[in-house]
Length: 193
Figure 1 (tube, one colour):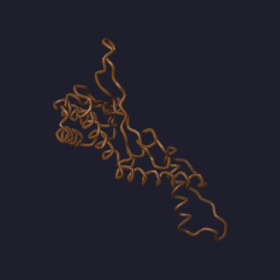
Figure 2: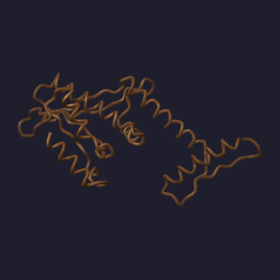
Figure 3: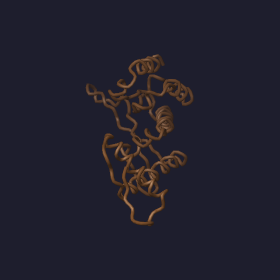
Figure 4: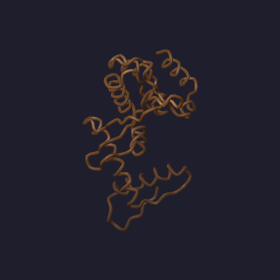
């Protein structure tokens, strides 16, 4: 990470911060490369820090909502369940789609709290408003690797009273790549419920 300066315009602390920002950009580009600091890098870092702060606050202030997309049996055209879709109603930015905040939640470790909220809300609303139907919840690959996922889901099902066979957990194929044995154990524990 490289930064330029002229005479005594910048403090040494500020120069080090800028060089660090440029260094992290170089690492993100695949290492073994150089990056010169520019003001856009600082803006991106500041925007990320603000989004992380807002994400934490959004969880505390219950700014997230679930929408439900019907799942239809192709043979009978009957609604058999719903897929839960998470959205963030940010007070300044409006409705934010998950592709803008889920990666940040995964990077910062907030994905567990966010996912617990989603599962709890989806189970409670399904129990109360969708008798006999199932609900599907997406679980990120990072969260699936958490050792307590099955136990957390079991607690939420018990807390909300939703029958376990009415909750579907959706995962992407890449969930098995990082630790196949752990993935298999978690899948077996979930299936057993």
